[in-house]
Image (cartoon, rainbow, N blue to C red; front, side):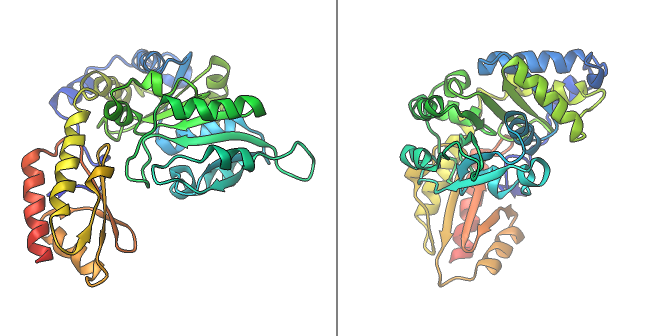
Length: 341
């Protein structure tokens, strides 16, 4: 099976499994798991932040960040295609009583600075208090697109003028850094907080990190406890994360190259539309022509051993990742051609 549903389907290789089984352990809830401590210190250093916190998932990472930045009734500003808004079960509202203010995402997933300025609330009792601006890099729903330091600093200037905070959902920020020939530290320098996933492009089995200032991370630690995210001998999982940071970052360009090959091959086939020029990282989105039935097409591809998602009517997503090689791309394209024919 060539599984292109997500970069979350990766499995640990021998080296990562060995790191997990040999991990030095303690009790992370009591704060003495040495492997978790090393992971948190390494994550903070990579991201250029004072401290970091290991949490079970990306959704929890974003949630504890927003809860730690805000009070009930506060408003956070984000894009209408943001992962926080679309795929995290409304948790900021359900758990934290936070109010989302949606702005239209531009084609590359960014928010217009003018729209952000216009969204800011006056400080008066009839309106929720604008508190946090949420950005996403790379941007899932907008095709894995990225933005650079210049854009983040433009938003930073708006936040500083208005006394707001910036949270960066960097679930795949290592992909963004690889695509831009930059560093995670540079891409997150203007954010008050950053979350990133170990279990996506970095191909660890579980876990995310929240990075930020010392006082902020102390608040996140309390929020993690309230949400049931404290884990005991979590070093077993943290060891996989450390291994990923040491062995999986440099190879992300291979996933991006495979995604480009996939997009270029699909662009030559009849019955679908795709823009190879829009592929920056490890995601390829395409649309199926109205003349073709979406569900039978998806089923036929799976029968031939190629799995992927339909993310909205007639729109599909393919994600390359560790374990997918160029020969798999060739096989997938051959099956696409047969089905579309």
